[in-house]
Length: 141
Image (cartoon, rainbow, N blue to C red; front, side, top):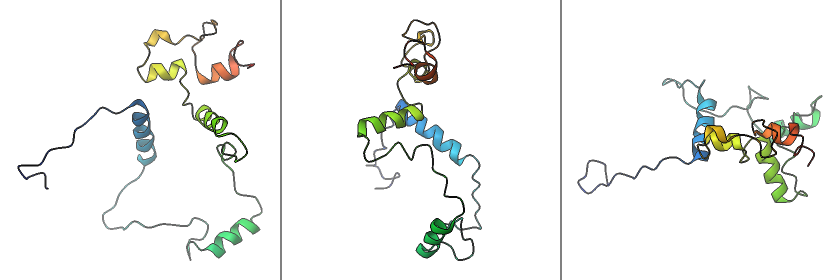
């Protein structure tokens, strides 16, 4: 049914959830420098071999003959199969600053601006860095 038909009902629009707003912001940031051009078509590009493109043989050769092993990301070690899923999820959320600390709750408009003081009573703003690395009470845990 087309939008011009008399029986068409437009989809309902709901406000985005806080995590959806963050995802939209991240996506917008990633796409900020992308310029679309009408005269060029989209295509995949293998960065390690611009001439012939991707091949399993080329990828294997790159991985086995590289002088320096490929850089591992900070998040690669979080998803280790021997770590409990709860621990991996917690570490992933911690590294991406996605834990419900008071500064995140203020940013998501769950708490008021003046409700961001650390629960440890140290009078510092409760941020992920403060709780886990700087708070005299909680960082040792």
